[in-house]
Length: 186
Image (cartoon, rainbow, N blue to C red; front, side):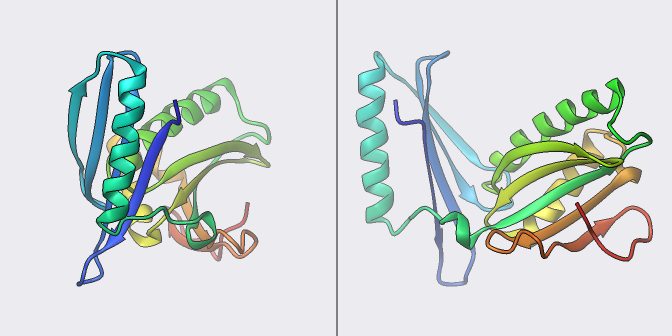
């Protein structure tokens, strides 16, 4: 099984739309998810008798998307958006590891259902927890991260968000800070 097909297209007004599809083995369903990037998507599920049938549905989906002008956005054209939490200890505590797990899970879901990207990794650095997200639209992703963290009640007062082009991972700019800050550093 080839995983997930995720493609994008800009309309005449410049609005970015997305479509994605995958086979959910647990439920035996082919799932299509689509909509305007940054907004809650629409989802359609189709029961599938066998994984082979899902593979042909995925191939047909990819072909239809290509015909409709949708394409993958290469990583080099996307942005890193990092949700950063200030910590009280250098390495993080058990409570911080719980925050990492809960925030990562929440961001994976929140971003995915809005076509806003993927959570790629998380790490603890000196007094910080960093969650790295790869996103096609930086400003919508920054807003979505704020909404998600606040909505999940995940220590919004400790949150800063930085963003940088994928190809320039050392040029992070501060996009949000709960406290006055001069800049953003990993």
